[in-house]
Image (cartoon, rainbow, N blue to C red; front, side, top):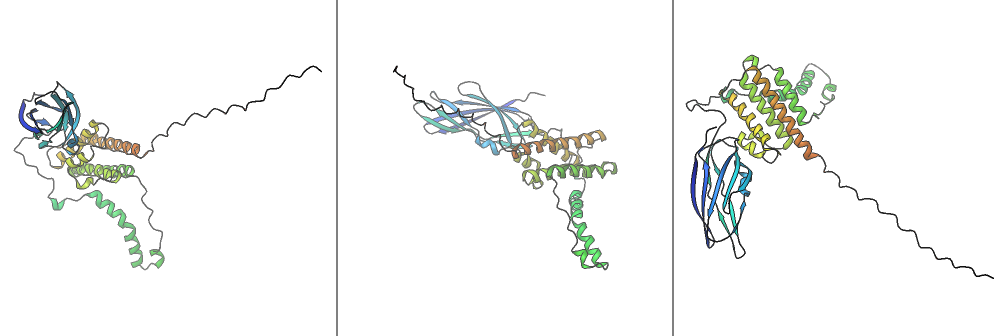
Length: 322
């Protein structure tokens, strides 16, 4: 990986009666889901302890991995970006604290150019595999057909001269499958459709992405089907315990988009591998959901109380000689 030249930002922030000069070094560019450093150096008058508030990062395009203090007034932040294009690293609040006084100063917002994983040739336009009006989500149509089939059968029986008994027949059994079971059934149905063998690789990958989004929507009550990949990943930031799993999810969705927009044509082995990636993601998310639903461990019971001491007995007097 080539070394990226840092860019220096100078910013003068007012902190009450104290003036703070920020010097911020950032990489010239960064790559999606690859960690990089931002270095902050503060210049001010006096002797202060510095504390940083990173609250604004919670709703940004960046995940904070850690802060390293590199001197009395120098800090390095290690972060990972989750968006492509120019994203703004938010302003951070620095508290300057001493025995005599305390001040607050805000750092500048930093624009950062985030590049994708894949190399963009620059002169290629994104071409959808079908015009928008021709695309349909076959999984949704399949589900709709399954729901309408019992009603269509009853109507047919009535029109064919059946009695009212057909109308009051046994209702369809409710679908009690869990979101996990539904996702696995959708994967099986997708594989049975043999779309890659029919030349429908783009539709196949759109369906892979839809299955993951449908699972997230059912299990975590996030409107995943209405979100861009970027917004969906931001919504899942608080779900994963390991940042690598969040990156893995972003990579999978980005790879599906690459095939959808005819930027990449996977081979047979890669297609099978991506199906396994989807299964692993759903397994991972289902495990996270199960932990959240499980009750907290019971507090250890207190040891039994010792038995009360026996009641005191009256002393017996000595008998005299008679």
